[in-house]
Length: 390
View 1 (tube, rainbow, N blue to C red):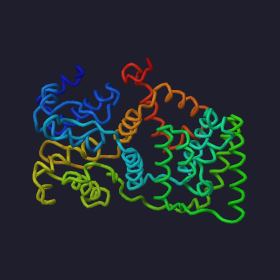
View 2: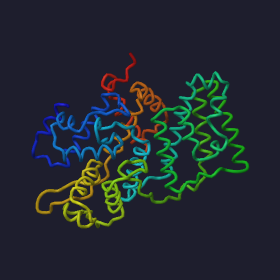
View 3: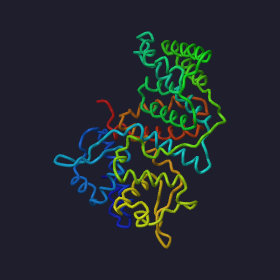
View 4: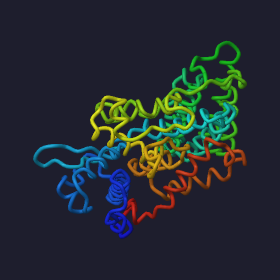
């Protein structure tokens, strides 16, 4: 337990929901230090209470937050405790997409040209990394071609397929975030036909030859050309995004707390609480949703940790919706990279490759978030994450 957390947890002025959020983040930090041991028991309930000097209620709320973030869940019975899990890639993807949904709702919007700009960067990075893949070059291109089925060479999933070839967790996450954003903006996953398809095959052949020859600059160029060719929908057409607040893989979806989290988040986004977005007191929310007060408190703890709501004390006390924050997507992306055991040195090399890309990569609204999360992860020391090879 860090000294900072020990001081905070002893402060009786901190309300329980905030204390639970602090506890959840401390446990996340400690799981990172243990190399994110997926499938193992981190500690029993009693050990967690004693280690972090908290009560049962606070721990229960913290566990809900950890479930939401895909860090772990409580296994009941003898030998049970906090079971460490690997966050689904759907969690950070939904968080990144959800951030732009809130921005869109507030009138700031994200243009499809930014999606395409970020996609070009990811494709170029994937091509450069593929050039370093010794197996792909030694096999005379067979490994590369088998990993890229014919139908994917002419679809919007091309960048996702390229990222999967690299097996780089950051590029896999980035490509799926862009794919989801693209679909929400009305892009089609259908194949092109006729001359466009023949052009794609020629561009793909050029890309394959550059990768086999380990021509990183040439591969990056041809990858961008191919992605440009695949961008065939009307750039002026933009549509609102649907609510991806909780991904389908979230453990919370199976509980009443998770259902309430989704319901409150949806009603905030659809304007059910008015322009002021005042939710009211916990008792009012319990009556509104016909839920137990303890269930409402756990749901609010999850939403507060996500930066969606906050509480105001005083005459006009109660809960209200917050402005969109980067805190949740940054944390969930970082957790996913840590659980994937991505070497921070590898992350730093990727950052250096990104910096070699044209200036628009650093100015792209979508890629800024992804790059910020990668930089945050890379700053974690190899010693702290215990990823160093002995």
